[in-house]
Each structure stands twice: as C-alpha cells, then as structure tokens.
Image 1 (cartoon, rainbow over the protein chains, first blue to last red):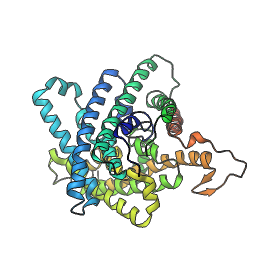
Image 2: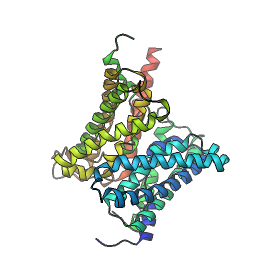
Image 3: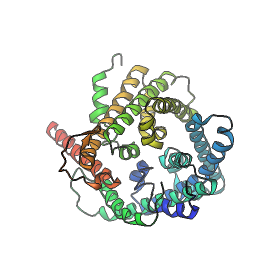
Image 4: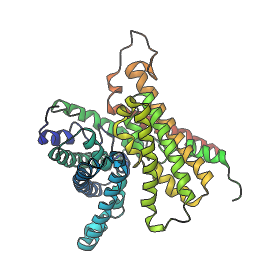
Length: 196
Length: 204
C-alpha cells in the first residue's frame, strides 16, 4: 500500500471524499438542522471538534487495548461508548465553563452522539488501516467537509424559503434535490486527489 | 389496552408512518447501500432483525431500567445485536460484508432503531414492540429496494445481479454515483407525500 501524505487525506476528506456527498454520513442532522446558517455553523464546529477528539481516542483504544487482547469484534460497542462518554464530558465542561455556547448548542450537543459521521470516521479509519497522523488528518478533514456541506445547504435553503416549490416536495424533498445538485458539483473536484 | 391491532402497527410502520419518507430518519444508510439490490436487501434484513429484537428487549426490561441511563442501556442492547449481524455476515457472506463496509456497524447509529425504542418500545409491551420494530424495518427495506431497483437497472442493466437488459443498453454512469441516490429519494418522498396528501383530502 502506498503511504498517503496526511495532507492529501485532509484535502480529499474535505472535497473529493466529503462525508455527505460521497459517503452519506450524518444525513439526519444534515437535513434536520440546515435551516439557519448560524445554527448549522455552530453544529458543524461542534461536530468537527467531537470528530477529531473521538477519532484520536478510538485510535488509541483500538490499537493499544482491543488488538493486544484480541477483542476487535467489540469495537462497535467500545467506540459508541467512548463517543457517548466524550460527548457527555464535553457537555458538562461546556455547561460549567462556557455556558453561552452550551445554551446556543442546546439539544444538538447530545444528538452528536448518534451522528453517524462520528462513528463512521472511526470505522473508516480502522478499515483503511490509517496511521495515527493519517487518522487525525482524515477526522479533521471530514469534520470540515461536513461543516462546509451543511452551511452551504443552509444558505441555499434560506433562499428557497421564498421560492414556490411544488407541494409534497417542500421541506426535506427539495433539500435532498439541492443536495443532489451539490453532490454533482462536488464530483467536479474529484480530479484533484482520490483516496480509498 | 387489552388487545393490540397488529395489522395497524404493521401498516403504520410500512406505509402511514414510514421511517424514511415520513419521519426522515435513517437516511445515511438508505442512501449509501442502494447501488445494488442485493446490498439493499441484506442491509434491510439486518436492520429489520436489529430493530425488531432490540425493541423487544428494550420493552422487556423497560420497567427495570432507570430513566436517566436508559439511552446508554438502549445503545448497548442495539450494539449487541449489530455485532451478531456483523459476525454472521462476515462468516457466511464475506463478500457482501466487504461491500457494505462500515455501514453494518453504522446500524448502531441508525436513528430508526433509537427512534422506535424511544417512541414505542419504552411504553409498550414486548410483543407489540417486536411487531413495531419489524414493521419499521420492513418499511425501510421497501424504500431501499425501490431506490436500488431503479439504480441497478439503469446503472448495470441488471437486477439482483441477473442481466435483464440486452447488449445494446448504454449504462447511465450517474446512477452509480452518489447524486442519483439523493434525486431518487427526493422523488420517492415527492410521490408518497402527494399520494398521502390526496388521500387525507378525500377523507375530509
């Protein structure tokens, strides 16, 4: 296997292997929360932060605890527990030291636990055999890519609100079509780099 | 309620309150694995298995679970069933398991299971919860298959791996690529919303 430069993985995770447009991860909150640019930006930052931290934690847990003890099959449980625990911890820290941010994020913070993008990145990192630096670059890049996608969709949806959309397609329907068009646009980036 | 109506629960899960096109949850895997019918079918069956049994288990122990750690307990129960599915797939269908990649593991974070656990299994006896879980899983499988059928026929000219379109067929490359999944799901939402709205207007 060719060693990929972490920088290449970072760029690829943002543009060509974007979480939303090519891996379909984190779709639920992507559709549900993308009505306002400000809230989606806040959520995007929170997701990026949690993504980067949990990928690091899970990397160490997997390679230093699960592999030596032959417990790889437990990885789903262990990963989801470490993600849930981390989000819980983050919630307590934010509430104590940054109450403003805590109330701004509100319900979205606990919901990060069930955002598939977070677990997905940890699983991709294992399947693709990334080294530590590669995993870190991949997780940060994925988070930024996710934020980019949700903020862009929120911007478009704010405009769509005043357009006349056929009945039955309003709301999530048109959001999905918009996402499809955005995904088409992102295919244009695929010439830059490819990772698999 | 002494007697529950299992047909009503089934119909709610599959059509009236379908998780994918009514509640818009569980979208990630619905979009990701629909490039081939076989993948979608296996994924749907796996999800139905996990949703049904985890709803059953959660409902079984709902009286003994402390309120504030119930999410944790639910995630653990779901994860156990997902591990069973994962090990089963790797043992008997190694190629499919590879094709589905991380999406089998991602059943854990599939909102359908968590949603059903919170919305139904938490407050209802085990047997209706089992039926409810299975019904939602089937509703999900149905949507997956209807997307996958279109994508596979237009992208490869085949259905469940069997070639059905002749030599002269030109494959639509876009159907292999991600955007088509978004468009098809949007079209399904459009059609079903229109049908359901017309019906409710007639009922008025």
